[in-house]
Length: 121
Image 1 (cartoon, one colour):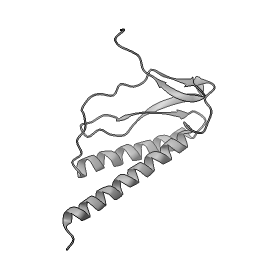
Image 2: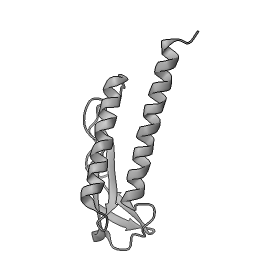
Image 3: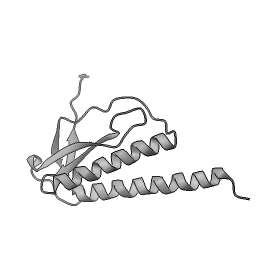
């Protein structure tokens, strides 16, 4: 006898795999792992994902040479799908606010998001 719980787990896992696939496609389209970063002005960033209590889960850099409209549509689709997943499966997360980076820099040939430090040690 198969229980509803097993069916729910299977459905949830399948939906999570779809989210993971969407994210990997976004990373590929962003060129963050395939285009050498030699000039930081050729890169930008955007918020991505949805925390269960609101706000982005993080930020992703992307090359300005890509089709920005298509890229941002993929990011929005992923973010909306993650928000729906969180509601459907009653996902919990921290409710801290992820502050946006101040810029993108090139570090060792890769784009790196730069965050301002609010407190000096």
